[in-house]
Image 1 (tube, helix red, strand yellow):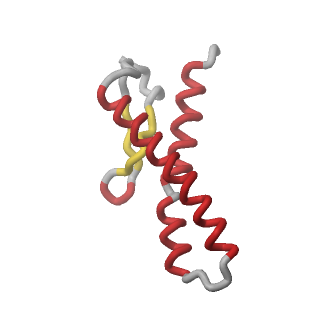
Image 2 (cartoon, helix red, strand yellow):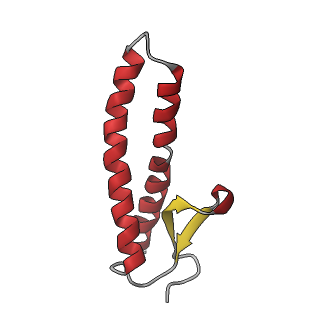
Length: 94
């Protein structure tokens, strides 16, 4: 099993928006693959939303609700960045 500090931040949160973690030696296990797939979808969606956000910000008639929705949809991206940084640090030689 992994060491206590070798956990993966998952791309979804738990109750009260608290972070969820996965502790496993199997990067090809079901939960790891599920997290990878969700991260891929979130990043693809984020790329599209960033394009839409650029267009909305350039549009002087854009409604504030549109911008709030875009911002809310992008909240998963920093979580993915933290998770991937932790994964890379875990595989780098010490």
